[in-house]
Length: 116
Image (tube, rainbow, N blue to C red; front, side, top):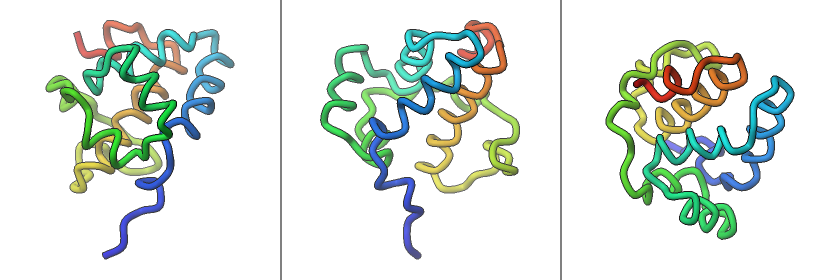
C-alpha cells in the first residue's frame, strides 16, 4: 500500500497555513507553537530546527522527543473522520495536530486544548 502524500510534505510548508488560520480568528503564532510543542515534546528551539530542516510530517512525528500521552484524549471529527478511529499511527498524529489547530482557531481555551 502506498503512503498518503501528506507524509512526505514538510511541516514547514504547512506551518504558515496553521498560523494564518488561527491569526484570522485572533489567536497567535506563539499559541500554535505551544500546542505543537505540547503534542510532540519539542522545545521551541528543536521545533525551529525541524522547520529549518524542512522535515517531513512522517519524520517529524517519528523523531518527536516525546509524544504527549494526553493526546489520546483528543477526539472528534476532522475531514469527516473520527481521529480516535484512525488506525495508521502517523496519520492519527497528523490529524491530532489538525484537530488542535482547529480547536485553537475556534477559540477554545488553551487548558482545554492541551487536555488539562
